[in-house]
Image (cartoon, rainbow, N blue to C red; front, side, top):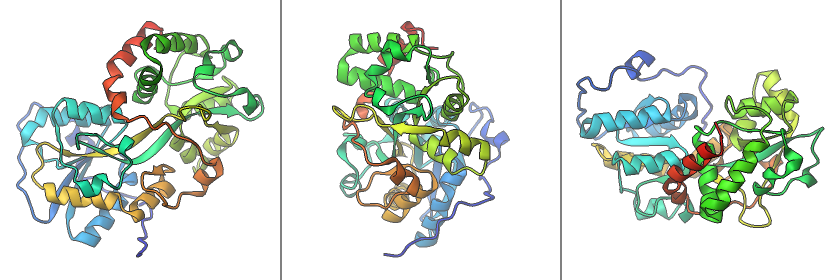
Length: 352
């Protein structure tokens, strides 16, 4: 099999400037005519984490890819505002919560083929063919190497134990990753048990939630807390960063895989869906197939330290060093269904 040389680009030109992306969506929008050699992508992934793959796809297929990148929620609002006039053929976004929302508001369509679906584990895809997972990431516990013995750790549920009082850092309840984690608890434990867990977790916060996952890791390194709940790829990015302070912070913590004796560690996806307005649907499906190829899956594992959805794909040394783990096999669609209840539970618990 031919191996593609997909090195992250140092300087990437965006299709539209930030000022264009922020233009009022109520303004008239131009429609885009379908082209046999074109596909239009809205991506919540940063350009450096998607454009090398898109360039390789164009080189292989001859199909031009027009790329617009922005924040995930902004892209959903844009698709809603554009309606059937949207030029977008493909939506690439992070977290199943957003994929579920895209389905609920009617901006994507059930277009995934059987060939594509057969490549992806059933729990990482929409059962009605609206979206597929492209990569997985785990939401794990990281702990201070010098202050926590991993034998003290076991499950997400155990984080409510009084021994962790004022020792846990985590992002705010507005964060979709945390909402999906709580949604998974609802699916497994029910609403009342999840409410009790969330209340107990909040009592053990070392500080008011603030910042992103990298900030939680930095807080552990600085001694502000002893544990943090984060997505694995953020830690991987820090470990491989050219910023020595980020690398040092990441090296001061270790990964713990929760719930290995029962349901497994909570996972989520970056995923893809065909837009309802797609005018280049066939080309969009060809691009999905390319993103699920072994070459693309391996590039994601090496460039962003995410786990492939395809079995047998080589992973980065960083991922290997963390070891293997049992992942939760809950169908991720359940996370979207439980999102509203999860947010309510978090609010009642005082998780800000």
